[in-house]
Length: 106
Image (cartoon, rainbow, N blue to C red; front, side, top):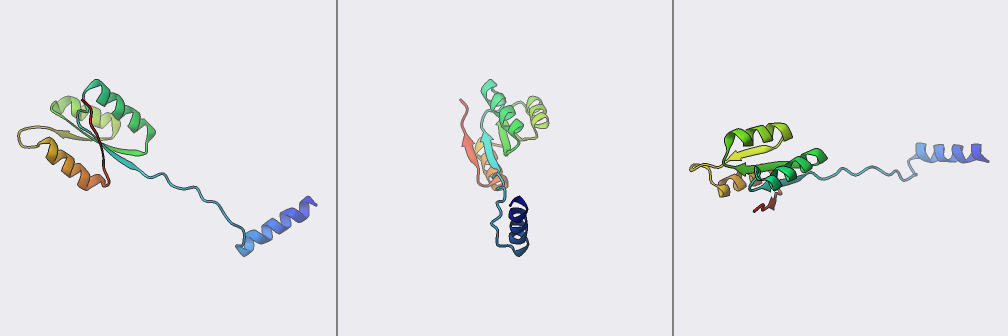
């Protein structure tokens, strides 16, 4: 009985009549964190980067610490200056990572 079952299943497979289930790919999320160097922002960036299914961008004013965190987590860093405002950073990240989820960290 078991041999017959296996033969039928193999025949179904060869004929293509058997429904095959395929694993669905996870959709990659894009997240922008407005104050990535705050303690909460750092924790969120590290948690999301450890999951591996997020593209992360964050903004901060300290270029040295921001660059270190970006390199450690594989995220994109925007250094806020007089020439680069938060709105410009969000617009650039939106263009690169569409659709973008905005996380506001106080």
